[in-house]
Image (cartoon, protein in one colour):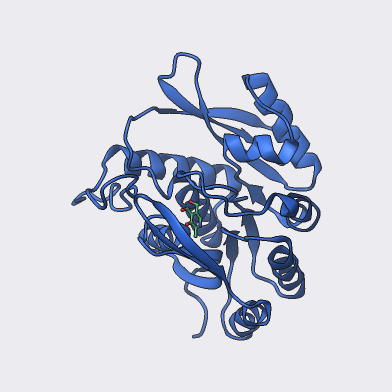
Length: 270
Ligand code: PXL
């Protein structure tokens, strides 16, 4: 008996207030019954008011994290979070090509809810060239999708066209998150699967400041479900439902932009 228990990995940064980054990912893995591992890339000094400082880890250390995890564990699915710059993306891509860490969920984290930049704009091309082709699922939010295709996406048709464009760059399945509907009652995610099947996933809009970690959690739940053997469409639907509950049952942590509630799907939720 060594590695029968489902294992997932996040390649990303720590957010000190626990609301986003690897902390939100590990909360999500835990709640979905998957053992979580980390290749830490960076750390930010953040609280609910914003990000106040950040550092990236040395590249040889990051490569070592991949090496030791590959030597011992059996990781079935991996997601990315904060990747900071082009050198870091190249190190991550080199190691994803060298070892088998299962299916890749690429969450192209570019900017935080507070507007802090977590990926240098010079690194967008490296992300496109090195990581998008490795992705089983890519989960940009609406804003990140605009950055990646290099234009505004005002209407639903624009989002549909952008998803196709991102799929043509090599990611098999695309989920573009968080397009507010025209009547503003829902937030709609658009999904384009490898088979060509596509659909909108509307979720009720819930006005709250406590939505930090939303994107991290969507991609982490997808990763957890893939690690347990789920198909991509089911993983996406489970993630969307999980995060809606987590937004609609906020917990009181921090003064401003607080975290979502990872316990929200539990019968005894706080
Ligand atoms: O939610 C995106 C995100 C990812 N990773 C880190 C973060 C944040 C947002 O604050 O701090 C480390």
